[in-house]
Image (tube, rainbow, N blue to C red; front, side, top):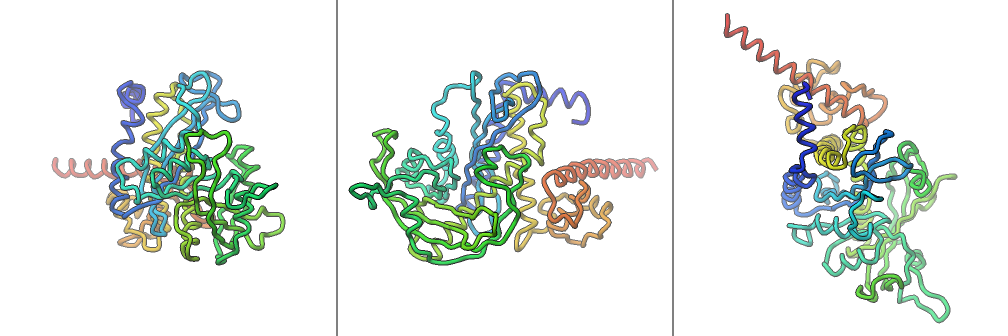
Length: 421
């Protein structure tokens, strides 16, 4: 905000009972649905993250999160193109949950998966979306909801469930055993992204150890199983359900590195090696939501907010979700095989500022990648460090907005002086 009046207006807006997270994101969600329709379909990646806020004073409406801080959980559903480019299309659903005394009792926390999927699918033909979820989404109730609604999905298995085809007199068949018994149908070289320690919870680091980026050779196999309903599950759920299973595993992992292994439950066909590969490639799209969360936390610095109530923080999150999508789209376009011209993402005034401030001359019609790197350099990005991170990109873009205001003010001043002369 440029002055105290604007700042006060922002506080009143964010704290107003008439403003809600749903109101803020509704136009963006509708635009996302339209982009999904235009694309002919999409993956929708579901994930949960916690937002934590420090300070000794309690903030109204927040509850406990990991590490003893106060905050809340947010369940996000991000649409991503299914054409191989993994281009973000926007947010389809967001839900929040507060733990502890401040929480409104809304049922089991695992319900967020089915709720998020149902909200994401609203207003779209059932065959247009393929739902993606990590191991936390491996819930029998969720799988049943997906099957009964004829939804398409790829969910990473976490539970070594009983499978009916392999039941024996003394030993029950298990999902993981059945998956590991299936023969490989192809091998593929893939690039694995890095995992840092910083900013991750201890239990997450234990589950997904730190690793450097590396090329890995993965083998893929596939089979079908009949999953038995767990004993603790509601008797109203199907007694069993047939699912396709795809397994991907690292053939020769480096010494000292945890080998990659994914066992995926899916509705997608697995009749050919190409279909099996498509399932794995689909699941790899899940990484986009991790990038999206980092864009919110690091690029938008959302957790640094000093707002004092959950209601205001939820409303601010709505704006950060949209800004983070814009940052994510910008960076994804810069990596595309056929990136769009920079004028699709930057105003003429912004491009003029980048030309004037960049030490490397921009072409007459720069690509989005060239403009993005020029923008990131304003935030301190060094070319030798590879592609810009969210922090430098955010700082650079913020500075570019300030330069643009100065540029436009100078143009107005020049016009006013000319008129007087």
